[in-house]
Image 1 (cartoon, rainbow, N blue to C red):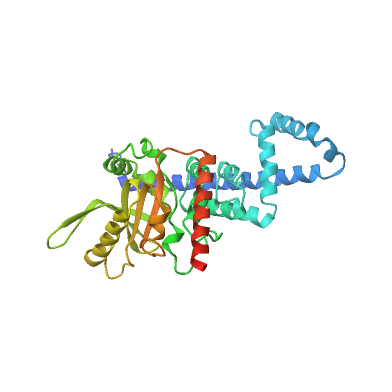
Image 2: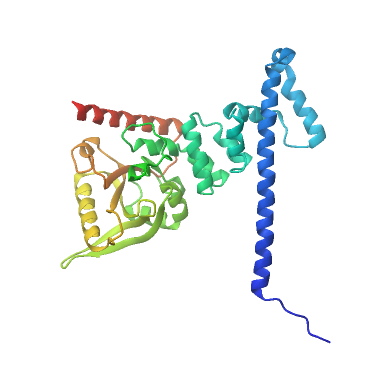
Amino acid sequence: MSEDLIPSSDFFTDVRTILSQARHAACSAVNSAMVAAYWQIGRQIVEEEQGGSAKATYGEGLLPALSRALTSEFGRGFSYANLRNFRQFYLTYPDPEICYALRSKLTWTHHRLIMRVETAQARDYYITQAEKENWSSRTLERQIETHAYQRLLSSRDGSAANPEEVPFKPSIRDFIKDPYVLEFLGLPEAPSASETEVESAIISQLQSFLLELGHGFSFVARQMRISTETSHFYLDLVFYHYVLKCFVIIDLKTTKLTHQDIGQIDMYVRMFDDLKRGPDDNPTIALILCADKDETIVQYSVLKGSEQLFASKYRTVLPTEAELIAELERERRVIESRQTTGRD
């Protein structure tokens, strides 16, 4: 009697991979079909509203009646609120070609969040980034709530271009936010936490920090030492940006930005380029994350017009939507003021 054959671990791995891929493909197909169906239902609702007696009676019971009928036959998922979402989905993307492009990318939960974003440029950004970075619906919700798109625009020269429309030669300004929202660190609002505490919290929540930094950043080192013949210097955090093909030094300051901070990071960048930068790397970039910054210091320092040095505020407590919008509006006015001063 022959002994039972024991399949190799590679065999089990291959079979498991086949099943996992098949289940993923099946889920994707179902999701694609349902997103398309919800768009079509939304279109039917809108067309029914716009025709004949339904237009007059919509507010009196069209959607409640449809909800009752669909729930009775198909079960849960067709509440009054969901039908309103289907309707809004169609109104947000009335072009059938756009709907076809959307249906295979993200889940209905993702679309339900994105369609409430006001501008088409912002919606395009969140759709593209959610797909590219494989954001969960919770991550997407946080990105929207913290106005990630607007914070990217706030670090630019005031143009309303889509941050996802990266030019042939991408610039770091396409990736820098202002402010950064670091509520996931679990720290009190600066300056209560020390720089060491902020740095340690970032390392312990590195995945969340990388999501907040955005596309292209990969972690290299903490407290990297760079040495001359007479001195040693330590860089708080070092990343590499694989789109820009350059190192990014992050310096943490739990107080208001000073000209000494700017001079120090400028020196670090020059030293890093001399000692660490490889022959195929682009010039090193530095970002000072500070609790606050004086725009006069920014205006009259090497930060002004620099392609290598940047300063952004950070918040360790999640601001309200009104507070964040007000802060972004202040940044916009500052940028416009700089541009006006530069033209005079």
